Length: 227
Image (cartoon, rainbow, N blue to C red):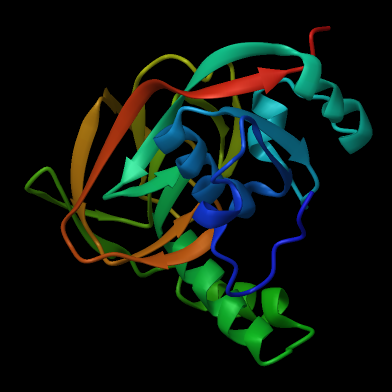
């Protein structure tokens, strides 16, 4: 076991591994899942973050100690998404939610205890403003564009759960209102979007536009407890 620290070369750390397990939240999983895919290693997710959306959707037990049983468990193939070459397991959000994530991170770096609250207040003040996107060459004005690795059950302005992780499809959701009652949805295997600021599995990110999103069906060898 190794506790990751800034500056660690994760590729070097897992050079001799025959299985790769990660204890952390959604934001910690993507880069290490990418290593597991690149080396075709079985991957174990131990839910140890704030929300653990991927672990929940994969049906893993929420207790980290119970989830350790996956090391002696069974393998299932699940999909990954890529934004350019960056791996995502859940979704990439562009627009207002991504702005919230970036503002929260900037304030967190300044050790602002009220980072999330202040970001939400500023975001609410901007709720009448839409962002400009170009989706597969078509201009789109919306508050949020969400690119998801498999389909979500969406409820108003909340991201729900996924019923499966092996559909082999991306789902693109477009919200035109501040609190939309419906989302425009399309299903595809790849899509190109021009918009630089994003949140990848809840973590701030910036991309050189345009960004090609694609799905890689069954690319991740996820281990789950046998039960």
